[in-house]
Image 1 (spheres, rainbow, N blue to C red):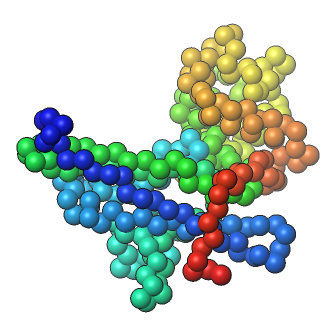
Image 2: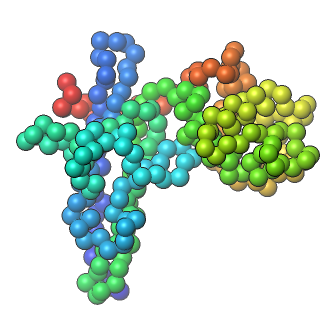
Amino acid sequence: MTWETAQVIDQPELRIVYHDTDPADDNEVWEGYVSIDFSDLAQRDEGGENTALLSYSVGTNEPLAIPNSMLQNSAGAEWSKFYYDTTTNTDWRLRLTEPENYTFYLDLAVRQPNGTLRLYNFEWNDVILPGSLTRDTFWQNRVNSSIVENCISCHDENGSDAYSAFDLDYNSNDIRVLRTDFINEVGEADDGQNLPDWPFNSAHTGVGNANQITGGARRDFTTFVQAVSDANDPNTNFTITTVEPPSMMENDPYNN
């Protein structure tokens, strides 16, 4: 393939507009409405059943398929076109209600003029819904996967290292169990093995695994530990941090 025969495809536009659910209240509670149309690309996609589908991620979580909770009118929805239909006043856009920094993804494969398939991987990582992040949401989006992937292999109390002093009750079907046990263990750590620093200490036998938690994931881990350590009652669902609004926010013209 040469540059002359490669077919250039521009990244589709993904747009978010905002609606304050209670404008009379000084405490702004925002919803976000996301629109995108890649129906023309979907028709040309030859990547198989797992491509030409929009997915998203928050925090340290792996990308997920668009859930029903984001769909406003799921029956008959076009999975490659999320928009507001002004002819019928039907809202097919994705509705975001949980404050977070979202990233959306679109992967597809398009046949080139010379017969080869070219893969396209589009990403939108500036989709922000401002608001408060509670303990439970912060754990679910930013901490749980780090603990499961890097700590459970040694610290699962149902099959952990016999020398581990930080035993966690891991239930893959209910993240609340692990969250609650982790919070309780934070307050009972042995002297010299206090979180958030101990896992990354060279004297920790699991330091190799712990060092896989890097960048933003490590900052989130530290933030969570410090928040529950400082909380008057860490077993309540208190606010840990706030997702700040983007520099520009366009109001939703269809929700006035």
